[in-house]
Image (cartoon, rainbow over all chains, first blue to last red; front, side, top):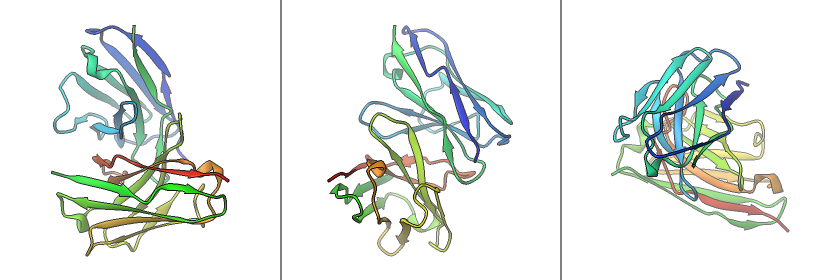
Amino acid sequence: DIQMTQSPSSVSASVGDRITITCRASQAVSSWLAWYQQKPGKAPNLLIYAASSLQSGVPSRFSGSGSGTDFTLTISSLQPEDFATYYCQQADSFPLTFGGGTKVEIK
Amino acid sequence: EVQVLESGGGLVQPGGSLRLSCTASGFTFSIYAMTWVRQAPGKGLEWVSTVSTSGGGTYNADSVKGRFTISRDNSKNTLYLQMNSLRAEDTAVYYCAKGSGRQQPLDYWGQGTLVTVSS
């Protein structure tokens, strides 16, 4: 199974900050990586797929990059509605696996 | 508008069974694979099962293999998860998602249904 490791596990930031979350796969997954945002008590919401493609309706302040084993999710200017938990997911092969999550908290 | 809506969750004793359903609307159900993902209380996301468009291909996590069966009825736009031999560690919110998750994103998720396995 492909293990997905996210860092940091949590980050405290202020509105307007730029933050970067990293995700590392235990083996190469090409560009088959997705990012999801989850708010408390809600379902996950797709942000990025194929490592860098922005899902329709997602604000352009979100961006993704990377290939192979190392990926990043960047929020260019944090907004109040962005405080949430973010998960990466490898989409290369079954079993699908998710990272452990990164909680973005208000400083 | 794409919508997926889960139902069927509840409290069940260890060793018991439960069937979850997920009704879909707003897209052509029969041309998309569908997936179940679960989330234990306070924990991260865990993939459970994926079914192909026809239902002929299924993929399952090792943690549920031999106990859970994913299926679909394209005439009813409905996805199912039959869960047998339930264990305490199966307690989670179960989400239905459109897509296979493999080389295809999980682009729409339901609100989830809670399954609690406890005596």
